[in-house]
Image (cartoon, rainbow, N blue to C red; front, side, top):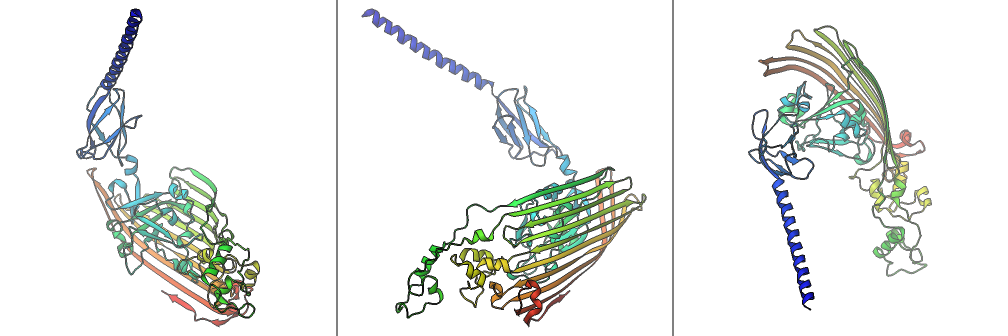
Amino acid sequence: MAINTNLKLVIMNFKENCKRLLLFSLFLLFVSGVSAQIQVTGVVIDEVDESPLIGVTVMEVGTQKGVITDMDGNYSITVKDENSRLSFTYIGKEAKTVRVGNRRKVDVTMGDQANELNELVVIGYGSAKKSDLTGSVASMKASAIEESRSASFTSALAGKIAGVMAIQNGGDPGAGINIKIRGASSVSAGTSPLYVIDGVLMENSQSEVSGASRMGDTSLDPMALINPNDIASIEVLKDASATAIYGSRGANGVVIITTKSGTKDGSTQLSFSADAGFDLLPQKRTYALSGAEYENYMRLRFPLPADFVPGESTLAGNTALGWNPDGTPKITGINRVWQDEIFRLGVSQNYNISLRGSSKKNTYAFSLGYYDKTGIVKNSDMNRFSYSMKAESTVNNYLKLGMNLSGSVMVNNGIVNATNQTQSNIFTRMLIFRPNITDREIEDSTDADDPGSSWNNPITNLNSVVQRTDARRTQGTAYVIVTPSKHWTLRSTIGGYMTDAKSKNFYPSTSGMGRVDKGRASHGVARTTNLLNENTLTFMKTFNEIHAVNVLGGITFQRTIFDNLTTTTTGLEIESLDEESLKFGANILPPETSYS
């Protein structure tokens, strides 16, 4: 018994010693780990004016450990050991990475990002480095525009530039887009910014590409006539100081578009691009009543009259939508999912070819483009053909000549989809029109619940209504630049653009929009002519390599002429010619004209 007791005591003592040894080893490891860590402090200052930088991110490379500098530019961080590296990052500054080594205080000086600050930005009638800008100017380069794969560069601006809001007022391809810079700045006047395309000033007037107004007040985007692939850069002038040179016309902001020019290194570049895109609908559809649910709803909403007698009484109006003539519940077994009958796979195709080059004294650029897009709604599409030519020649040290010529042709077929036309809006009809009508009702146009209203099924509206617009735009400028001395530059430009639009709309008597008028057709033409002459004189000089003076003065002459004529007829006696049925209308409405 004594031996067993002593043996147990030995074993217990051995276990206790092992535990103590293990705890002591863990303590040593912890102490060594803590002692290996290093506390590093320092200050981060600006290289330009030696002021402290607030909010600089200081990270230990390879870890998630980081801090930011305080109001005085100070920071304090614990790193693993002397081999650790610290990274310093700050918006607009060159990032730095520093090894800690045997230092416990690491001060860092951060300089400006040279690439961004030396980048030239177009402002008004000249250009400047970003580092010299005092106004609010945002820039967007060609790569970002091309990535959007949009029909119009105005679509590409959405979500890309702070303070710029792009709202599309229709779902069909090429639909009008309202651009607002820093919110609406006018209550009664328009809120569209001023556009300057290769020096030519223009308003984003949607009437330029709309000869006759469409049902639902849907409109087209005049900027869809410009091929985004031809654009080299877009500058958006947002505040008063940046737009002041344009006067009151720049009150809503200014969008400056510069198209691509020839190369600068004497090379010749031939490029071709082709891409395709698809617009897919989500698998989950917006909920709408099925045929059976609709019939049950109509019976609950419009029950049989209390005095109804089968075989003697007649059901009419809404009551007949839920009951058979003999008073039994109507059960057709028909269930139309209008969303599946209206939508399709949207496909877009874009092809561009360009030739750009230069010689010792000349630069040139030529491009062709074709864009085609079918919308996700049937019978909505647009296509555009565009061309662009640009050349510049240096005659001698004092004289330079240049010219730009561009044009495009666009064809657009749209649908009635504006929200302010509830009864005619295809998307509204898609969700609320009864889903239990037969094919015969659609073919015979007997689907109308009320012949005196514009309510009918969306398929008839989609297949029979025509809203077609053909638009052509040509823009050209020629300029001469005279440099009599090193500091003086005289530039004179003459140019302008012309836009022609022809619209043909047709709303047959079988459609909701044309039923009340017993058929309606309208033709419209519009022409916009813009003539421009600008003359500027610029003085630029740098004193003592640190002081720069840039003075510009000039005068601009501009004339814009808008001419429009629209003819509409109703009561069409012949509708088989669709939009060409205009001349068969029994009623000729007074023509709509405008000239300014």
